Length: 475
Image (cartoon, rainbow, N blue to C red; front, side, top):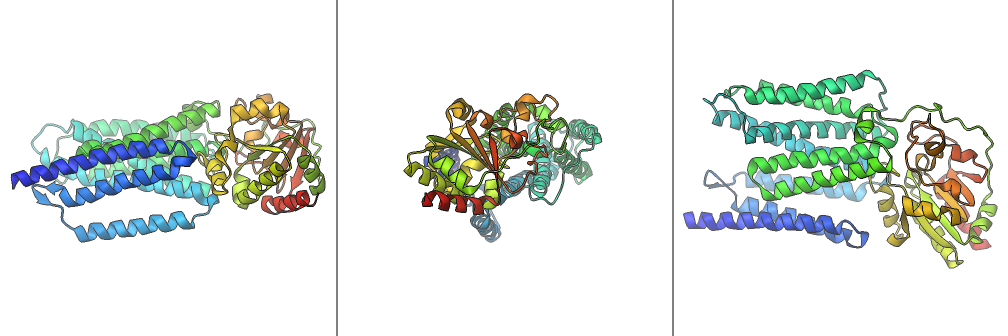
């Protein structure tokens, strides 16, 4: 019997190693759109293998796992919900779904810690304290997972328009106070003498972490939201890694480390793209300061007709399209691709300038345009696109706002001053497609609207693109 257990344990450990390798290979394949689908499937296969072999071969006190029926039922329900949500979600609601799924990961890590803490206390009865590796893993997993869950739920409500930003300066003091209290409480709990059944300290600790998750995200809004989503994602990964340490589970540990490190790197890259430090994003969030230091000297707005826009585009040599969240709201990505295909047929070179924080989540515009089968080589990163702007005949801004706002370069009093932008103003002609003159998500007026080179093409992006395509076809 011991030989059988040994063989089964070896198979289980090997399955975790295989799952870890599949996670790493899957993440590597996600770095390019051509292999991203395969990367998702590889990582999913690794997770499926880890779950299957855990159910089959994991032993608790020498006995097989029980409650198989409940486990399979939970897996079936969760899989169906995940599949249904991903199939039905609209591209405009993708950031909200990412926030919810990320929050669920944090909640799972927190629940694991809540379940394991009483067991740890029971095993350490008689000891002077709980200052050890498992206690650190449990408490860190609980704190980070709770913050990730609560913060992700607030991010979901804000992205879905159900909750506004709270710009009260006292929240900064509250946040700092809660963070200090959480760190102090974590140390005090580990120094406590373990007593079986005394769980109230961990419940208070959980409540404080949840409150901190709420107050941490509440004041953050505007163009900072993609950074927050990425940061919360990294939190969830770190919390999952704590569970991997706790259970000595290589697959859980590797998955958590990959998510945590990837989310952290992405957060740093986006902060760099905004020319801001992470601390500045968290503490000094901008947005909601309309009219402060963003007034244009010349308020003259010029419009362009559909026929004039069609002629200008058709007889250009190079055209850049700058997509933004408004394109996703209008669900006009397919028409946008039809426009660039039509112009290509007339000998016009068409590319897309992608700002790192355009949209409501990291990579939002890349995913949106990939859905419309736009070739990946047409998507140009901000720095490379800016190098070509002076040789560009027309820049079409569709639904973007803050990422093309010249105030980031020429208005020191603007909240976004110093943030790198796509320099649409350097092109020979600018066409901005918008419903109105309203400010963007950062609630800052856009001086590009009043630029001498700019012409406004008002209307819903989908309807306007439809008419524009028809005009070009009729030339």
